[in-house]
Image (tube, rainbow, N blue to C red):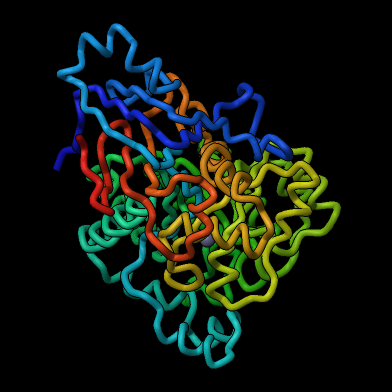
Length: 434
Ligand SMILES: [Zn+2]
């Protein structure tokens, strides 16, 4: 199946609030007060052609434009009165390559078991592995495509997708191939990440070092050679991989020319000093960071990606210290962490809501973290994350007059439509092109 394409120019007019997130340049991910500047245009208009944005401004100027007047018949026009248009969300941390929900774990957790008790009893990440190993590539790819479509329905147009439930050379490569197959059928953008170092598989139980050898010497070079991954990720935490393992994996990723990101300090603190020397694009979770970690992050270009959906679903009282991180100048992104064990949600609006209510981020900060800083976390800031001339026409239209309503309405689908490179990838709430 070919990707859908729209060849006609697309014109969005009468936009109640157009959130451009036009940046002040290219000087790194957004921090501090910059995250509050959404660059709002009231009664805005956007013209898109050939999959990209060609102009952004006021509706009154767009309707006077000579080129638009002349080509009116060929232009697909969309009336966005009383609506908010913003850059499609960039969900920079997801795990869609799995087969089934983990309902036994869910019930155990409700009955009081902890994340680690569940893992020790054979649940957790390892319990998703068997099904992924047995699954055919096309079965896996269908599951992934369903998730991509669900994400689009919530306004996501770009996402990072990790492997990590195969944990053998063949099954990790199969997962990455399934991600590629699903991505080819979706008009949004998918950035693949090899997460072979998610947890040590059962057959390597007491041979962690040998498993790390397999990741470094086989998985990473093969994924790189076959161009199946752009990043390598490690779950660096208690019960998974330690700092030494992670540094070895980072070195192997660098050697193969892949980018680096890591799950870190979700369950217990890992000092970030040596990890940051590898200049990872993103460090994710960061629940347990101390002042020295925070100040190191603040002076780096590494994005701290917060995934409050996991804290919510695990029933934790504590959330990552977003305000402290923001005050220290750390560049924050927000992501869904979509996965069957700890964050089974594809909804970025829900993540934004958690960021506001549980981590005390303002609605503006949450939107910037979920768009432009998500793009920085994936190295896609030149093409994604803001509505500016020359960038991809990746847009989300919300059926609300004020952007603050996006995180305000909890678990309510307010996204009317999403466009990726100018092609419509989701629509609801009676949305129609005029
Ligand atoms: Zn994760």
